[in-house]
Image (cartoon, rainbow, N blue to C red; front, side, top):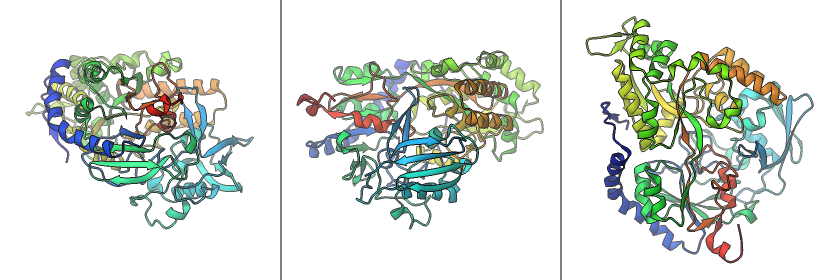
Length: 580
């Protein structure tokens, strides 16, 4: 259930906030520790890797890869392997999985994938090119499950040989291979009999990935074990994944002294003291700056006052001026994020793509200035009533809850800081904290007012902008909650996808940055870190600051986590001669 939090947020120092975490951690520690250690004792002979990848108060058995909000986040990659992955930390180099190659036709209007020979589904039946064709055609027929956008790109799918699939495109789209990186290929012999592929819970999945067998499932913990027919079994040295139910960052903090988590990605306050110092030999982290986190409004809201305000650029600029980004970074984020002061929202890792023309007058609204925000709202006709809250010029009330998943303590505190600024200028803002699954459903349904959210970037900055600000993705994925639509921007996205040289792409992306900065559809706040912590107590082979081979996160939006899993080796195996 959504909780309304007190808008009168008291700013605490990092040390004071850490002290507030500890009592909650102490209360939860014994229960969580018993969940973690109970299974580790019974499975000590196995290479059992304990992960935390999502915050939930209880597990629901759902491994449907098409249920974007409801699926367990160990579904993609570990149960359903992608065709090909592009490594954004290696210049977009392709890593082939179910496919071994792809090639565009000379006119760039079709692309042919070569599907790997000898792959079997976890039930022993062969995975063929027909399964890939079936999956794409099922998504074409069912818009509710088309979270990768095949309907926007594809006109036909044809099998041209026993292991080749020709995909005919609606128009030239050189970005296409990257855009379907999230495509989950499912077995035709199972899914052809599924009446509703969106509602199907898929409780006992048949997949192609390394971890398909659900050995144990309770509301508190589940175990996902190796595929008995995995095609790349030689690379897989982990026998099972254990995923304990953890509701939020404070509960993660409670588990740390037990030393049972191997791979996770959470906000840990004062991480050197609360995590590393607990076991300096084995506990490590690497948190380089990552995606841009922005304040986003539902531009298609049915509430008249909110709709008028949210779609007014003067209102959005005023909101930006009350965002105390420095406090969000230093207090809510313990200094881990980096303030983003550019209206274009370009992440620091893409500095080489930066267009200085998009960072001139547009950035005037990126500072913290309550007086300036008040004047901007006054001049735009947003009047304060007797209750101190503003309405539209027509008198329609403006009132909105800023939604953030329960347990995301750093973001909740950042939203509290935002709410404090909004109320200073007479805007009736509160905070809502639904459970993560409910948060995702509300985003996809459009039944929310506002939120802060990040986007998933790719090897270039294009993917993050296209999949969060294009009409094609608006409201279809959780990364595009604002439902923004701009024909000029859509035209530039289309031009970029048709571009055939890096020079053309950079020129077009310069224009994209200008349109975004000039229209200010979302309000950049900061760039969060890459959330990644790991323990070398039981496994080696981890990606690290000294070996930054790929994005190391274990979260659902990172396809490279599959490759990371395949790098890992049990410590006892390394000791007996395998250098991993």
